[in-house]
Length: 324
Image 1: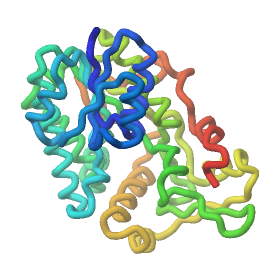
Image 2 (image 1 turned 30 degrees about the vertical axis):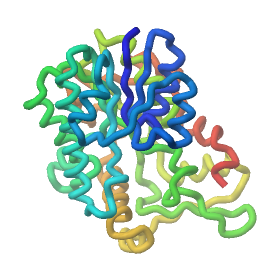
Image 3 (image 1 turned 90 degrees about the vertical axis):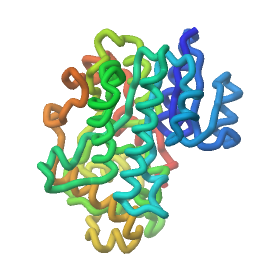
Image 4 (image 1 turned 45 degrees about the vertical axis):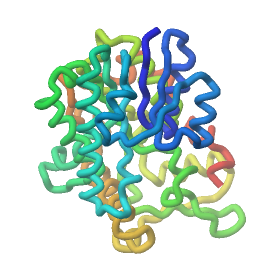
């Protein structure tokens, strides 16, 4: 049976890909994670996934982990690199990891399809006026691939993943804050009228999308698939929150300086850059997004999954009381 290797296999995206591919008996699955003794890794192992842990910046480790792979789903985690590194140093380390992944994948003779989860370049889309490191270093790695691992570049499908609605449940900076019984507010550095791109329920949706990509390599290789299910303001998100939970909520824009003071000069600053980028350069028209591969953008409808993904409202309904 063909082997599919999934990086970041215990994260929101990687686990979603594994959950989807587990439903197809043709795949043998191997997950790469940071700790194969974590609860999620042990859960996947019990389902028959071969779990391996190691440094995704280590080319020798990756060569072994990719052995026999027919398909690879690749993702890197910028946010875990912040702390001892500043926002650009974290981007440089992510770039180095993506280089190692690309080199190891290019040396995997059995590989037929490489799927890379990434984000459009803010620097490119803003003509250099609004760089965002956790966007831009991913794109720089793809441009490096195009030159240095061209054969891999030619068998790659790129997935642009938008904001996770799951962050309203999982991440402190996007959680609704209770101010009284039945009353909540959402506080972020973005205008109430700024339109944001959302990926819908990310763990479900990325699995649906990658499964469809791998099932149709003849039409997906070289293409870029934006996983954007909705474009909405945070004011509209608050209205969905009220609809789903029956609670009262208000959205309020916080200044960049105050948000950075709350969340620090690294994490806070990078979040400000990302949200303000979406505010200044909304991508409601997917044609505004630059394709990365050898072909054009492929919509979810063209991929054949438009009716299978869970959008923003569906995700919020699914979260239910977890939003509180």
